Every structure is written in structure tokens, then in C-alpha cells.
Image (cartoon, rainbow, N blue to C red; front, side, top):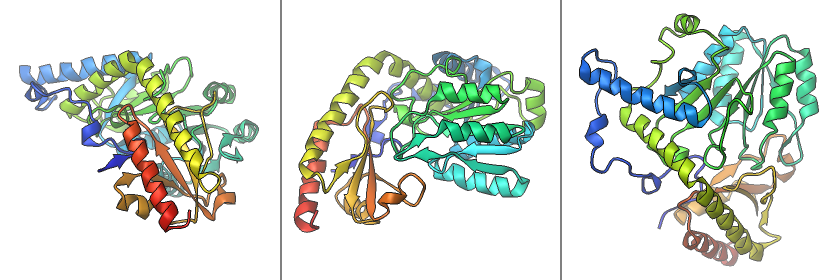
Length: 363
């Protein structure tokens, strides 16, 4: 038995919606050949671009496809250079790959980094953010819409207003919020946003990058990135088409998926109550959290990932050396995330494993 409680990072093959059982070959081939086949493939990409852009209330020309997080972040860093940014404001809770690239980029181009402050357990300190924006000539703010360290949503509209007030640019990582929330880039007033195909059960390997058209003209973008704006990115037609169909299904299934996630989360919490206070739930459902994420506090640090792996359960262990959780450095923080495919049977197995731990490892 293999259980995935790390849906924020991985979509297993059995959890990927099969859109192409009968006509997969229809979307094979290069989209950039000049003959009629290539033009038809290009039309497939443009239709997908239009549909996905409409789902987030963006223009089709504002959405780029990329084939990896590396390529996505690299594009944002190129944008930082183009905009002549003097300071990047972000969080130590961001994706590890982003942080590694950011530190290298900062060192190479001598661009300052300011780490956003959080109060206890991951609530963003807007006052400190406002103060640093006042001192910046031209800042670039990059934050996750929801942090896996807490499950809390950042106050996007308030941050956007602060950025507009101080002529800063605001980029939002929406990878973890897209599965549970309807996103409107105009309402939340961001300048850039990142989306991923695999978190909504499409084929993995495709990322959407929204760049507001007022940031850079098409001609300047082409000079800066050495490739046309609308043509940038992958020609993986199968995955792009899968992304398009997954967005369509996401919109139609959103109410029932939301009900399933909330019910699943509450069921999970009710089962974990048996193990309190040894195991505790740090975050539950409220107006600033999302429905597919929980953080559990376990005794002993650097201990539990291997134990869960041995039982065929995928979980994510949060680091505790940062600002948010430094008080819990002697414990393990287990991030558990759910999807529309998570079942009560899988939760029961997780609880069964915890009973085994309780008996054998003195939980």
C-alpha cells in the first residue's frame, strides 16, 4: 500500500486524471514547424493558453508556459534584472529550489534580499513589510499565496496595495492555492503569478507563468529573453492540453472537491485527537487557511520521515531552524496535504501506523 499525503509536491500516476485514453497521439509532435501540422499544433497551444488565462482572468498574451520550476524562476530573475530591481523581498519559507537560486542570483548581481518577518506560527507581519518597502527604491516582492509552514493565506490584497503605494512589483506563487481557490489576478492585483499542472492532477512538467502586460512590451521582452513572448516555453503539447482540461474540470468540480477536502480534513483531525498531546495539530480550518493542508507536531526531531517511508506513506517534514518554528526545534513537524483522491481508508491506515508507532516508539 502506498499513500500520498504530500500532494503539495507530488501527484502520483494513479492520481492523475486520464484525459487521453483514446486519442493521445493527436497531441504529439512539434508546435513550431511551418507546415500545416505544425500550425495545428500551435493552435492547440494557443487555445490552451487562452482557456487557462481566462480561468484566472488574464489576457492570453500574459500567460507563458514553462517546463520546470527552474525555468519559471529563471524567467522571474531575468525580469528582476530587466526592471532594475534593487531589493528582493521574500520569505525563508519559500520553495527550496527558489531559495537556492535566489541566493546565487543575489550574490552574482549584488541585489539585496530582505526576509519577510512572521509572527508566531506563520502570520505575515505587514508592518515590517511596509517599513522595508518605504526604504526601497524599486523592490520585487515574491511570496507564496499559502505557505506550507502554516496553511495560512497571506493577505494578498493588502500586500498588493502596499506594493502599488511604493511602486514595487508583486509576484505570487499560487501553486498550492490553485487546487482549492478560484484565482483572479486582477482582483488580487498581482504583477506576476506561478501555477503548476501537477497540483491539479494534470500531467506533470508544465508550469504557467502570468506576467502582466504592463510590465514589459512584447518587443522588449523578445530582446531581453531572446524568444517571443507568446512562443516562450515548452512544446509538450500533451501536457499543455492536459493542463487545459484539468483547469476546466477543476472549475466544474470545485464545489464538490471543496466539500470533500473539508470533510477529509475534519475526519483526519478527529482521528488524530486520540494521540494528543503527544501529537498535536498546529493548524485547523479557519478563514485564513486552506482545506487541503495540516501541520502536525511530533516528538523527536529528524526522526519520522524514514519511519513513514518504511510504512509506504509519503509526508513532508518541515524544517524547524527558521524564524517561524525555532521554538519547536526539538520536535518533528509533519506537513500532511490532501487531494480529491484522498480517502478515509487511507487516513485509517495512517492512524493504524501511528498506533504501531505508539506501541513501538513510545509515542
